[in-house]
Image 1 (cartoon, helix red, strand yellow):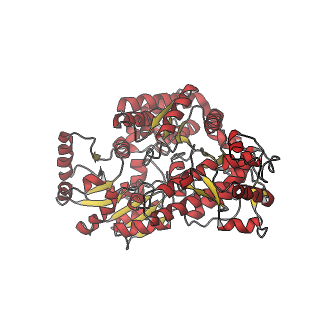
Image 2: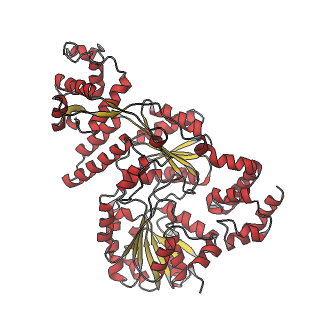
Image 3: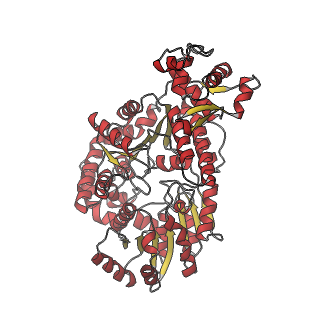
Length: 599
């Protein structure tokens, strides 16, 4: 019998396991249950794919997205693994064929949606065959507090009841302590071994900048750092997605849209375009991305504030899955704070859910306003102990913000809120403080109150930053019933009376990621031979089109980069390149060697 390492090398083409992969595989292959928390791009799928090949029977993989299933099966076919999908994308005739082959033992892995898995027909089908294991991917969907809640996932505890001797593995890249407890409880994994890898993604540069003109800032960011790269831009509303995608296209970029308001055909068409073509920018709501296994996404941008650190981590984690440098970039302003708090207040959810949503939002706001390393703050949120100091790859560490004593300015802002009757939003209050005699100010006679013009020495941008930060500090509250009016809180009193001082971040111009970070991979490729890189990419694109799969299913960019740098000339040398297993060597070895020998 081959060992797990033999399978890793010969079939998947990698020389060694990473992190806890070997321990997880050994535990699951021996029949043990486990919960695996591993960052996006950390190699979670190998944790059940290799045990599936080691154990007798078929592995049943529960996955929430059709696109994810199809891409993983296509990748497995490329390396000679017997795998299939069973979901709504198949015709009734194809479903019958898959079911017949399943019972006949023709598959090593079967990917299935939770809705189909839980039907009486499919459960009866499973009772007629030998099952190697159950893998529950994207397990955070189990949690009703999770950011991708799927009701069907809650019922997956049924698998343990009906098949108590079949080992189970639940996997996710995103789960705080509450969500982990919920996964264990709802899936009946109380006796499971828990594997928690580091959530750190050191190849991702995190940057959060003050929002002035979001779209213009986005365009500058893309043109300066990612002109020809694939990326994802997240927006909160469907309307903003459509408008942003059209705006980027009008400025010469290859952008497309994705949101739940589009027809299924349009969504699928755009998703396939993003997966199969290079250099496409997907503008989307959070409806897009879970399970998208595209390794060469070089940036993820947010034009609106995510609801939680879990959501932010999950979404930014779609960048740089191949381990190469990538950017997580976000614009953030006072309007985001007001909008998110209003959404929670106006939600029809139960009080307990609102309280949890509010806590998650506060943690996200703290990440935005932090004066210490963003990476450390985010990792600490997930319960990971990190060493003090600079990560060297976030905007705060590269350009540490200054903190200033803003007590007097905050007192002016709070006094203005009080003097105007606690019935106005930040824009009006700033006009009062800066002494702008607008029509609205004159209508309400706010040019006659004591706070009119007492803040004219500060710019509008500075005042917006002050209001944003003191709202995050709970010195002001957003009244959702009064269209975002700001009101004093219990904490305001101590500041107004001079019993508490307030220190805020000083607004500074954003500093771009280091030149080494931005262009490191491209510089290496230029040194090794840009012409060879382009030849390999052209061959990969042609081959992928012939096979009807995304280019990365043939080879990841990281594998092409290794080929450029090592330039192997023989089959033995080619075999040593990570990502080239036995099946791919047989299929593509001669083509690759022909290209490499000519350079």
